[in-house]
Length: 153
Image 1 (cartoon, rainbow, N blue to C red):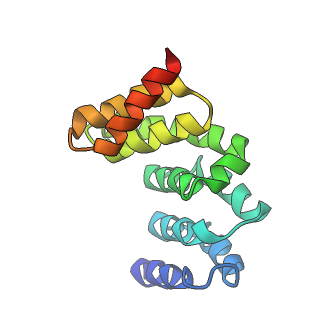
Image 2 (image 1 turned 120 degrees about the vertical axis):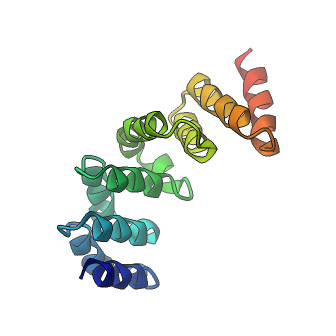
Image 3 (image 1 turned 135 degrees about the vertical axis):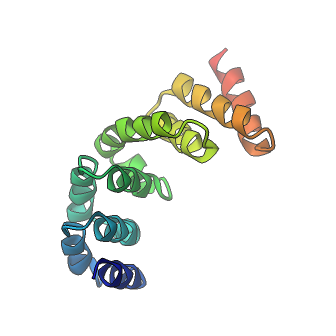
């Protein structure tokens, strides 16, 4: 059953590197829940095979799988910094995600972070301003907005 396969895949997350082959195979499972969990479990793994699979997953028929792949690319920022092409491919998915659910500050924050990593300070600022508009208690983001505004002047 799909829940058993997805749960097993999440357990493999505890073995980064050693379970990579099994996780890559699971990331191509027929069920989107299993694919999504496999991509999540691959977040700690590095290498060309993982990056290639993440790039492919950005075109997955399932929106949830696409968004998860984009989030995995951004996790800990290292992969996104080291792979500008991968980051560029993730941006349209993150933009689609905020269009689908525009009232979620976390989605806007991730889009802002991705735009910033891509060198688009104005785009990052616009996204971060949305975060502050949606969540006035986001003090760190508000401070970042002020620094970005000053830098762009």
